[in-house]
Length: 350
Image 1 (tube, helix red, strand yellow):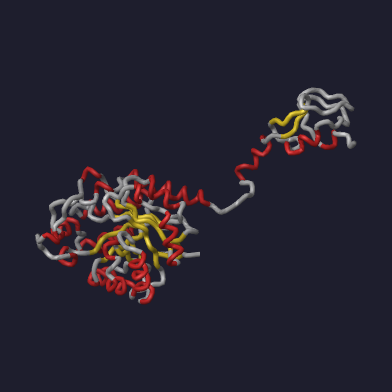
Image 2 (cartoon, helix red, strand yellow; image 1 turned 135 degrees about the vertical axis):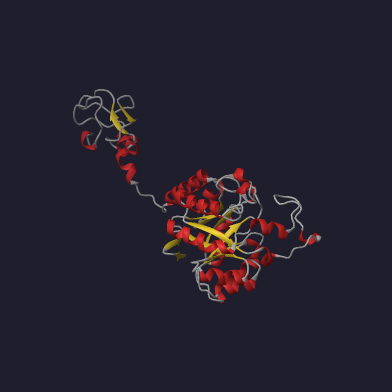
């Protein structure tokens, strides 16, 4: 069975889904809001909180040339540098946020966007690493993360099959033994009609990895549905309130929605169970209410059984219905009262 651990938490199809609450930029520049969001994620049932570790200067350059401008979507009119200035989580916050999560009993890790960020996170003893979908083609970064020997989770948004294969090879060839691929549609928000959740199981089978979903659709239905297709990890952006209007808030879950996701995803996992044709424990007391053959009018000894005096009805204390045609026409071996469950010893052998 494909499985690995992060801070002792087993992750794989044989375990409840690992729910990652993505803080991203939803702190809106306030460390107090970031701390509140971490504590909220724990209360709502998430397993982990994930940060993003970068600065605008490690992401891009400050340029308004056409290549660097955002046209359309949530961040229309920004250049990339402006977006990352607004959205980044300051490096000086990281220790406080890691400590807050650990004190709350929540696993905390991050997405590094360059090698320097990996070094910073190593100093904080990050227990795992996430590679963002846009960086899934940054093979040097994946190699650098792999060299830490820690679990790595890679989002596959926008990557084709060859690119995913290259990322997997880079991770495995450079020291990563615990690898998860998250199916992802890198649109914000992503339409549910493009979710293609069957890819979750295909990723696991093609690359022999734990697989899951990084979900940018609205609501929780798509994420919960992914559990039935083997998603062992679910990642969703979270916010204290969409009214805060942060860069990611419009497609992020509010607290009660995160609670619903955590509860429903775990219920969905419990419901998967295993392939079984045995009677469930919860069914055992109801067997008596199945149909069986009953005497429905008085039958004197020696009289034949007919469709008028024996019927297949509930409850189930008589002969099974499959014997109905065999008993019709037989003679009663004893006097039978209406309401008697029929048994073979009440019938004459002819």
